[in-house]
Structure formats: C-alpha cells, structure tokens
Image (spheres, rainbow, N blue to C red):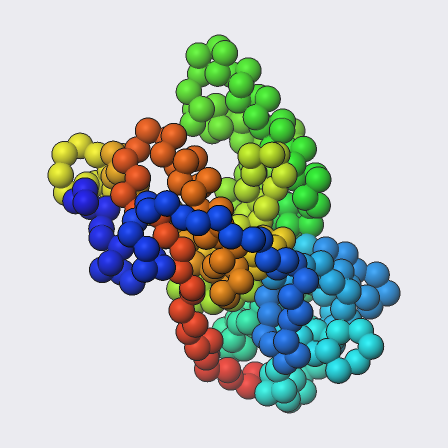
Length: 346
C-alpha cells in the first residue's frame, strides 16, 4: 500500500472481497422500477411545473406529483413522499407544517422554501431572506438561488442570483450542448498549444453564453458550509463520457504529500443515477496510486455496481496510476441532523 493513500480495511469499506479480485458476472436487476415507500423523506429536483402538477426526479426516477408547497422548475427540494391519494403528494413533515402555521403570513413564503430545502427556521435566516425577497420583487426562484449562494458562503448580488437561477433551470439537453461547446473550444485552443486550465480561465471570463455557463458552474460546484451540509442543495452539472450530463455534488481537497513532491488529493461525490438511485464515494490519489470507494443506497444498487466493477477496474487501470483499491459498500445510514427551529415574530 502506498503511503498517503490509506488502507481501505481501516476505513470500513469494501464487500469482503480481496482488492481487485476478479468479480463474477451477475444478472442485472431492474432497479428503475423500485417504488418509493409511503412516508419516506426524499430529496429531488423539479423537472417541470404546470397548474400545480410537477414532474420530479427522485432517486433517478421521473414521476408525477402534487405538492403542498409551491415548487418551480430546477428547484431542489426535500419532502415527505405521500402515496395515499391517486397522485403522489410531496408534503412537509407534520411538525414542519405545524411550525409554518404559527408564523406570520409575511414570513411563510420564505419559511416554506427553507423547510422544503431541509433548512432551519432561524430568525437570522428568516429576517435576512425577507429583506432580500423584497429587493428581488418577491421572486421565489431568485430566493432559492440566494439560499444556494448563502450555503456556499458566496456574496449575494443580482448578477449572481440571475446567473445561478438560469443555470439551475437548464434541461439536460441544454447542459449537454454547453459542454459540447466547451469541448470544441478546448480542442481548438489545445491545437494552438494552450494549457487546458489556462483556456478554461479565459473562457469563463467572456461575455457569451458558454462563459456564463462556466461561471455558474463554478458557483454550483463549491461545497456548502457545514450548517448547510445536509440541506437539499443543487448539484453542479457534470459531463458524462457519452456527452449526456448529470447533476452531482462534488467536493475536492488537495494538500502536499508527506513524502516527495506529489500532492495528496481527495474527491468526494454524490449523485443519483437512473437505475442506481443515490450513490456516493471517495477517490484518493497521491499522483502515483489510486483508491476508489463507492457506496450504494441499497442492496440492489450494490449488486448492480458489483456487476460493473470489473469494467470500471479496466477503465481506472488505463489511467496510468497504480490502482490500490476499488470496492463497493452499502452506505451507512445516519440520523437526519436536527436543527433548532425558532419561532419568528413579525
């Protein structure tokens, strides 16, 4: 084991197999049709909204639902999935609905948006966002982008709010087209001998739509601050090899290695696939060796990933790094963090 990469046995990942042992091929389960249990707390994204009916993506599935709180296209939310009616209902938890009913009418729009993102109702958040909501003319989409910026410790301005609102409302097809433009421009600059990082820095400073997309992507890629770490925040749109796009939450960390002139880098990610539901993981490298730990939401997702692991092993080994570990585990369930919620007086 290369020093700095870490031994997976020490961090409790893997499936009991020897690292990089050949894996048997298994039949692929149909994961896309797994029902969401009634009463489950879910996180998702609104794909479309019309006349109180929403198309939402939850755990990689696109479904029709109604909601007890207003939602809009592009919004990320947290809610209870209620299937007792003909059409599934997205609703607040009972205690959150009761709390909302005790607030002054002037605070309820702000409070409902905070609750729908799994955030606390503190007087500092309510009062600050109430002022901003007036400044933006009561636009809840702008309010949602303000919360996304605030969660990342970013300065709030009308330009940034507008930029992020546009980015979050994009469709996968629109995002894929932007990444195609980025790739074409990078290839052209590469033929002229320009380094990719230099190219990207210059490209995002332009005035065209591609530059706006890259600037918004930088904002959405920044990790949330700790008080917001468990909220239903947006993921940045990351390109896939087949030029589709997938929203994912990605966090990077890099530090000097304790040995030699290499840097020790970590990448933490969380995303939802069409078949796999929620998947997260951790990648570590010191520039010479590589470890990859993937965590699935449930046993079906774990089995599906194990079926693909030998193919992924081949892809990773082609990178030129020494692959020290590759494993799939079940995600450990943790209790949802509870925040102190404060009643706010008018």
